[in-house]
Amino acid sequence: MTPEQVAAGSKPAVLELGELFTRCPGTLRRARTMGIPGWAFYVTGRAGALGDIRAETVAAALGFLAPEAVADGWDTAVRVVRPLEVATAHLTECCRWGAQHLDDLPGTPRLTALLERVVAAADATGMPLFAAWRAMPLPAHAEGARAAVALLLLREHFTGAYLLAVRAAGMTPLEAVLAGPEGEAGAAACGWSPPYPPVGPLVRRRLWAEAVTDRLAAAGFRALRPAEGRELIELLTDVRARLRADADG
Image (cartoon, rainbow, N blue to C red; front, side):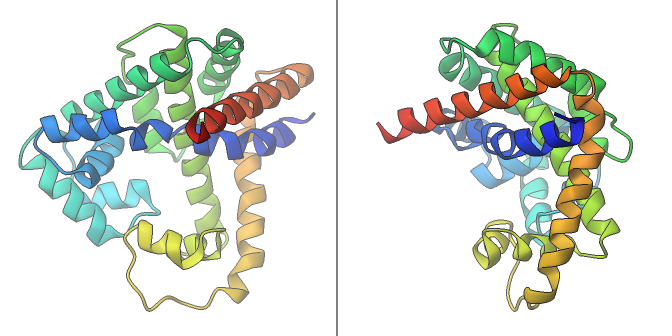
């Protein structure tokens, strides 16, 4: 498999697994103990790695969330706690979730090793959020925690690459969300308010942006041999299936 093919094959599982911890009840409890709502914890947890910056800068870095919703979450949090503290708590919750859900899975050690090689080799140019997260110190070193953090980092890398590709395609972030699989529901979840622009003319551009995303993300996957790329996709697929089965059971 080529690096672009491995990136494309890995992306769906990474995007899903890399944010599962944010919906965990334990993560939501952590937000309450810090005295901030869940949305403020999510926004500031993700962008807090960038430090003390303005809400407008946060919105630009996150890209796909509505600026007004970002400002609401960010400003609510920073009135109570420093952004880097929220990011550190966000990372701690990611590690806790990983230790709880991934430690005992048979493929986790190998998955961790492959993911960490990809993350280390990834090009952070034009992706400040990914660069900031990659520079964050890891608070726990168990295999499950390391795998969860690597998934978080790789998810931020894919998201950053997609944001660059969307802008290169001449689309706004809102248009990209609307043209995606969740459509208007996805736009509402990201804080965008109607009325929304028509989707039809955007679909072809979105598909082009997806292909460019894979090309941009491919640099990290060049750290793997072709057989290792296939192995990574298989491991990600297996982990996703196991976690879905646990959730349904």
